[in-house]
Structures are given as structure tokens and as C-alpha cells.
Length: 108
Length: 118
Image 1: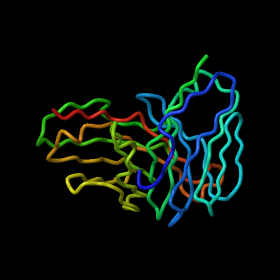
Image 2 (image 1 turned 30 degrees about the horizontal axis):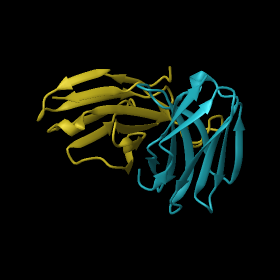
Image 3 (image 1 turned 45 degrees about the vertical axis):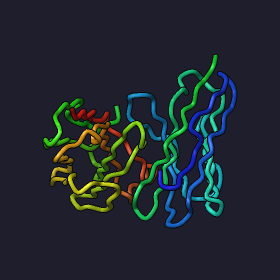
Image 4 (image 1 turned 180 degrees about the vertical axis):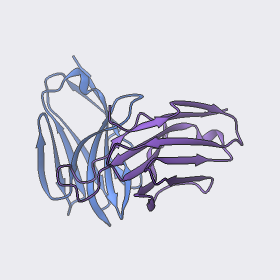
């Protein structure tokens, strides 16, 4: 997805912590989203970062480093319902560009 | 339920045909975005309208067009359909940028229209 890179798949255990990384080209950067998408359903908003640093929201946190073109989504206390795809999306020059998503599998 | 509605939910048609997908944004949202999601390409941004005017264009083919009406609903028109146009088409809406009590640019997605071209 136009130079937005994230791992294709990850596996983690229920109750554990997982970090999903996203790297992107920095030119024209204007903000970054993380979305969750269950199979066959619409994406749902998780977080929005435009400044460097960590944004925490319950079990989910998102980090951004604009100079490095890097973000991560941190999921704590994993639950089976967290099995889904996680999409990183960058706002670049008023356009929204999505990565191909990371499919996260949670094992009991 | 995001508050964004899309019709129809499913659409099956033949190559060469033309279809219209409809989206109603959440009450009060001025922005409407259209996306295409296919298995091999992921989610692709097509076009963004704000209060009736086109704001940004993504990977939208010339065979596709969209508009946003005065009541803020939007339609995506797909013509001369090809097999490769089979995909999920999502619409999303977001609040006006100067609204204080919402995350800037948070988008709310509709349930999607699944288009199958045979």
C-alpha cells in the first residue's frame, strides 16, 4: 500500500502483550490512524496520532515517531476477540493511504 | 452501528454494466470518503467529498465517479464493469474538522456494499 509497511501476520497468546509495527514514507505526512477490522466487517477506529509520543486508550496504545516514519500499536491483556486485522493508515497530502494490514491470531 | 448507512448490501451484476452505490453519512458529518477493498489490494482510498465538494482523489478509475448531494448523502457510480471491480466498497464519514469533541479526522465506516461482477 504505497510504501506503508506492516507485518502480514502475527500470533500471540491470550493475556499477553503484542506490538504491531508500521513504517511509512515521511513526505507529506499529516497524521496516522490505526483501525481494527474483523473479517467481513467494516474497519473501526482505534487511534489517531499526529504528534510524536504515546497515546494510551485502555488496553490499546499507539506510538508515533515522525522523524523515523514509524508507528506501533500495542495491545495488552489480549483477548480472543482481539483476533482481527489491524490497519495502519497515513494521511498524506489530504489522501488517506492504508497499509495492507496485519492479521493477528490469538491462541488460547 | 456506526451511524453510516450503505445500500445495497450486496450487488451482483455482469461485465459491462453500470451500478450506483449509495451512502448516507452520520448526522452532522460533512465529509464522505469512498474506499474499495479487494483481497489482494487491501483498502484503497478512492475519493473524499466535503460538504458537496470534491476534496481529494485517490486511486479512482476514470470509469468510476462520485458525487455528494445537498443533503450530504453520496453516490459512487461504477460503469463498464470488469471482473476485477468485484470488491467490498466502503463509505466512511467524519465530523467537521473544527468540531472540538471528536478526534480529528476519525472516520466512521458503513457496513459496505459487496459487489460481484460475473
